[in-house]
Length: 70
Image (tube, rainbow, N blue to C red; front, side):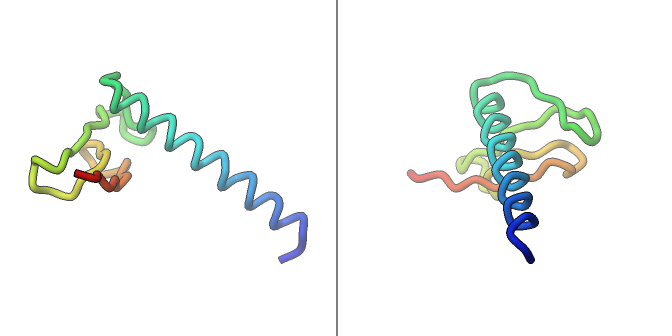
């Protein structure tokens, strides 16, 4: 991997991270955000639900695992 490829990878990774962070903030703020793949609403699963915590859509296209500190 040369320097140009590494820079490109770094840029793409940073954009993806920031997009996920923004999505998490919007969903946790209570906004109804549709999944980009299937269009169903993204929901939050909290630790009280006794399931893996995170953000998920109904079909599983969006699957962002979150760690909650209690």
